[in-house]
Image (cartoon, rainbow over all chains, first blue to last red; front, side):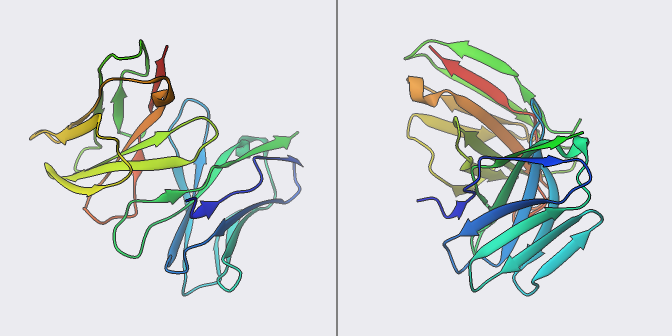
Length: 112
Length: 113
């Protein structure tokens, strides 16, 4: 049972434009969400997170939005840069514990 | 370099065999986590150790086992290997037992032929 879903396997965006990566979850008990970025031959690295008490968290060019009623979160990257080309995973820990449920990832390609 | 070291980086082995994957956590981190990423799948949590003790267990097969040693390095043992065990195996570490602040290693790519 996939509790965290990323339905878009890939996304291509022109440099300078906005990239929007989406994630849906089924477990209403999740109260914290994270985005990880992964380059080829490397492990995932933490990018940004959001608690369910917020609906937005911003860090530089990266903003995560959370819509609890829709059980949906999105990652916005503005402006997109070629170095942002990577696979992006959303993840959520259960209410008790810190073992993450990961989505299947979205491969972002930023075209120069 | 994330500080989490996984060896080997690549491993090719035959069905039915047994392999051991090794992970050295970041200095100061007491927790080690193992995740499996199969083709086109997200990372699936396997098991967590904290300061030498098993802390949490996910969807880890009975053919798989792990341990964390006194020096805090961890090993994941995979036995009676099947073609479907081919995957990327990631290790991560964190300071505490309940942290969200993981640091991942670069993974071991296991291919079972």
